[in-house]
Length: 137
Image 1 (cartoon, rainbow, N blue to C red):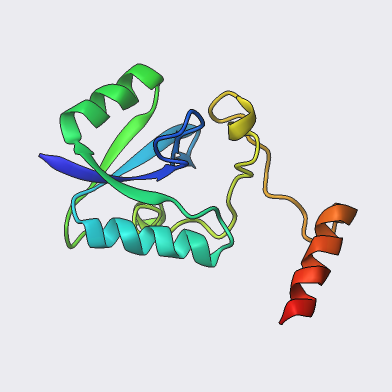
Image 2: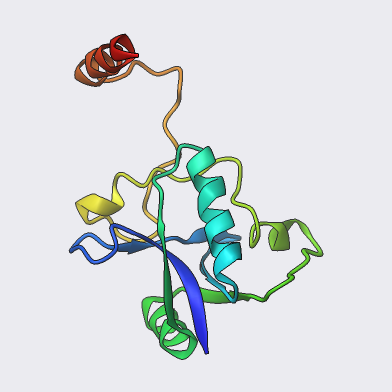
């Protein structure tokens, strides 16, 4: 049986899989339906999260990968209806996400910092580039 997972930088050396931290566990979502995985990816994008690609993979292989990596694989069946707040995370991402910039630098899983404070001063080069792009509009 195939499942759909969310991957970042798919096919590159820095490929990563989307996961959630739930009660101290790292959880990887295995969607039965591609549409559900794409909707979840769209919700991440709406939160200014890097946009993942939806990949179809073998469920048994994904469960084995998760087990070996110390992750928990959670299957999200078609028509899934959450029964509690934890279940809700299987169909909609949390409002606050972890900073994913460190996973590309080789950080250990689960070691990412909290999302950056939007009130903190931004990188001056990035701000200048943003203003330049806005000027083009």
